[in-house]
Structures are given as C-alpha cells and as structure tokens.
Image 1 (cartoon, rainbow, N blue to C red):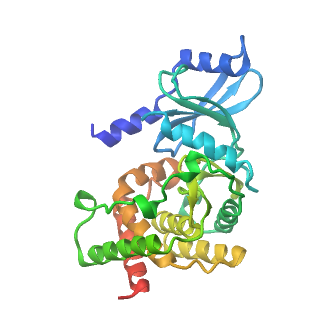
Image 2: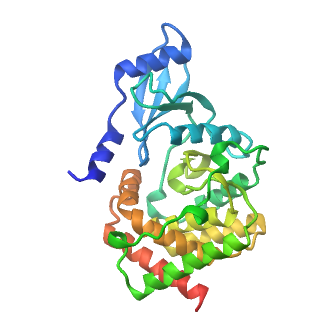
Image 3: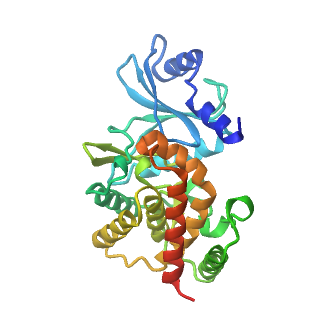
Length: 316
C-alpha cells in the first residue's frame, strides 16, 4: 500500500464511538449522544463526518490527520465567512488538544445539500458557482485580520512542482517561466486583495436539485487576489469537466462582477502546473463524487491541453 492509499484509508475510517460520546457531552451536556454518523465524501485533508446529536442538531466534525493548525485556521475563517452572502457553516467548537478523539477536531453546523460534480456535465450550476465566488470576494474583511486570513497567498509561497510531478517538456518549461514571472511581477506591484476561499471548486459546495446551496471547506481561506480564486476554480473545472466548463465559469464571473480578471491566463498557468502535481489526489476525490468513470489518462490530457492553451494566450 502506498502513502496515498494509506492516507485515504485513514480519511475513510469512522470516528471512534468513545470519542463521539465525549464530543456529544462536551457540546450538549450529560446525556447528549450521537444518534447518526455518516462520512462526507470527497475531502482529501481531514476525515469528515456528518453527525446528528440527540438534541436534534445536525453537525459536521472534521478530524485532522496532521496537527491542529489547519483546523484552527478554518475555525477563524468560518467566523469571517459568517459575513458572506452565501450560506456557510457556523463554527461550533474546536478541540485543538485532541481531548475527544486523540487528534484535533473541529465541529461546525451542517450546510444543507450534498457535494456533487454533476456527472461531469455543464449546466446552470456553473453560474451559481460564479455568483457564490463573487459573494465570497465581496465579503468584508475584518481589521485586524485573523492569522488565517493574514497567511501568505500562493503567489508568495508557491514552489515549482518539478521532478516526479512534471516531465520537462518544452511546454512545461515555458509554463514554469510564465509562473515565475507572474510571481515576480506581483511582488513588485502587489495586487488588490479580497477574501478568497483558495480551494473553491464544485466539490467544496453543497447542492440540491442541481443548484448551489452553500460553500464549505474553508481551511485555506485567506486574503488574496480575486482573480486567483477564479483561475483555480477554472483549472479544476477544465480538469473535471473540460475547457468549455471553465470558460462558462469565467464568463459568468465577469458578467456578475464586471471584473476583467487581469492576469487570468498567467494565474491559470500557475494553477495548472499545481494541478499536475496533485492530480492523483484530485482523481480520488473526483471518483468519490461520481466521476470514477473518468480515467487518469483523460484528466492528464485535459491538463496538458489547458496548459498549452493558457501558455499560448500569454504569448512569448
């Protein structure tokens, strides 16, 4: 068993019953118990389960496999996200010491709906996603910023995924130059910033009857350029659904906001290189959310095509 498969198996493991009992009493007092537990599929960083308490509350519990920091950051981000016009989870409790399960855990309210990749088909849901993204970017930022939002954005911390992740083709080498120049230019002339989700794609939304209900998984949220969020989501859609879906998203976001999305092509180059590194993991999430029929060869081919298209759009 390789490291990735071992990690995925840990994600799928149900929370221990004694830990659930400790959590329930901590949240509801003596006699409160967990009546129902169901794993929420698609997540790749934390073990995530929906739980119903005997007091009638429907909650989500995330258990970290790698320390408390990401859950502390998500807890802070959820507080800020309460000001977003889109439905988001409300933070309920943070057990960063691991008293309940022997590892850090975050509890939040459950947003209605379910994760859905829409069988790989385009549709009106893409417009919903663009509108939700615009609402995130319009959310007021607090002053002072909490640590979660003050974290460095990808353009400041991103590392080139060379070696085993990328074959050094002429296209890839040109793309790496484009991404490096983007970072240099942003450092010289920092962009305007907003609240960004930083991991926004259809798998981190909840859906009902094909329409968006809310946005979840705020662990990576921070302050950053809105165009970076749009580019990230566009690359994810180009991978899971194809280039036309990505184009639909960009057009819808521009229509909603009037933002010309300066430097979108270079941001899409950077995020496509990033996706080439993480695509084995993304495929596992896609498969759990209904795209198991899309083979790895297709995902890689789509990434190469979108990289070539965006590099060409940037020009020499």
